[in-house]
Length: 187
Length: 187
Image (cartoon, rainbow over all chains, first blue to last red; front, side, top):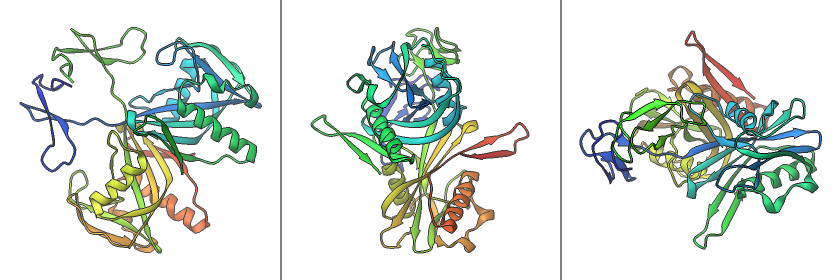
């Protein structure tokens, strides 16, 4: 950030009075420009014993598989965001949407909110951000071609719960260590 | 938003190519300035049969009672945010923090993530944003002096669960209708 989006003046990166964290502050109008984590809302869309994955048509991770998910928009609920992303990426309609897990990923300031939902008719086809959509059962999930660690962790939790016969609501973190490896905590 | 925070030029509010929602787009460098919901992380801090509330020393709702909660910061997890806010507003330390509920509030583009935690020593005293801190049991909660509807809904869920002997993880929405009344959905 170089300029104030209110008055167009330059900004300085400094700790405002009464605060403890450096923020971008306008040098003229003194507006404080807070920056906060963003939510990615997504869904595990179920059809009988299979779930829906999308092959990404966009970077990052072009050509790898993901649950339908994307940045939550202003003015919508998390459930609406999860349903909208599933429709945009896979032209699929959901019912019975319930919270399944959330993951904080602090090194990229993101929070994933992943729901479970039922495909209403089992149908899906790629939206503009997907090359391909497909339904997978547990044994056919392309584990080595998943786009993001959070998708791998979410699907591990999902199949573990499904095997146990009961779905919980999980709270987790994916933290990057100083050696660049990821540490996963599930509460 | 009036100016691009990257190059300082004016912005226009328009739908970018390939998008469906109007964004602020720089007239010169064409940076798209996305705006997304913010997360408020907070905690129900328990001590025996009582919970911690803070009387607000700041606007909005100065002088009314709230669970300790505030905007999640970049670089932290939701749990860290909930613990930090409890420390900042009530100088209280928590252990055993688990997810309790989330509420989407779309008309203000906020998502509340509320945890349960144990006060490690039962001690609390006001931080700079609080006039007072106190422990309340169910019968002494100041229901008519709570700062925000989301706090009322969270505490109703909490005491209902406590009465039933089992805590769930709840997903809800507080939606403002056209007549300005609030509608609460719990999934």
